[in-house]
Amino acid sequence: MRLIAFILLLLGLSAPAAAQVGTPAYIEHVARCEAGEGYACAYAAQLGQRGDQTFWLSDEQVRLRILGCRFGQDGSCWKFERIGRPNPYAPMRNDRGAFLPMVREGCRNGSDMACFQAARELFDRNGPGDLAEALEHGELGCVRGFSDACAVWTDVLVATGGDAAPARAEACFGNRPGYLPKAPYCEAGCEAGDREACLTLATMLERGRDGALHLHRDTRRARQLRTLAGTLAGAAD
Image 1: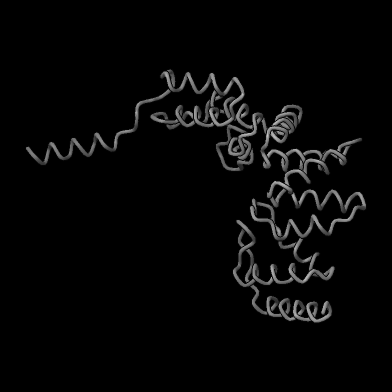
Image 2 (image 1 turned 180 degrees about the horizontal axis):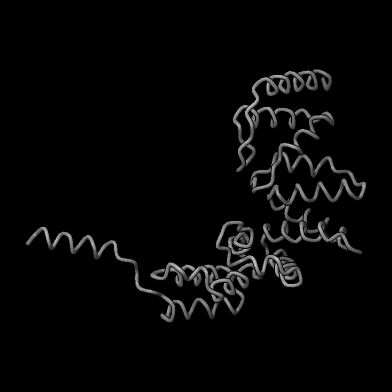
């Protein structure tokens, strides 16, 4: 009897939580979301997922994430970078007429991820006025500490003939790596005589990591870079 009771207890503990859609908490957070509170959008989406493992695929969940991104909730903007299957965010991500206004607004409301997304979209579109706006969004995302935005800012500066050295350095050293490769920016900085870029690239090659990405380990090249950094330091003295 005790064994049966124990099994029933375990089943009760492991059972999924009751679905939250329609509860007072869910309704409250959706209302707060629609009133402009980005965090409430994300929390409402999480509540909807409880007890319903398919809620994240629903149009309502995507709507909450769109609102969250618009209101500057970084995590909601990140959702639209999903590349796996299934991907409920793809229709919005592929609709430039809708996606760009969303991330523009998200950037204005404080999401550095949205600033990067807006800069990338504008740089890729490259129409009249797009590069100037891409420059603005890329710089803003970079100043906020997101090195993916620094990478796009660098690309725009290179394309427009601006001084890309400061942006390139931020792309290489950024404290929030994101998912764009940074090694090329460190390589370019090193070739331009930036000692710290050489050292950063050497560390990447030794660890086999480029931020969140895997990188082919090359200890021989790393030693060469550290030697070059020493030469650059001596030249600066």
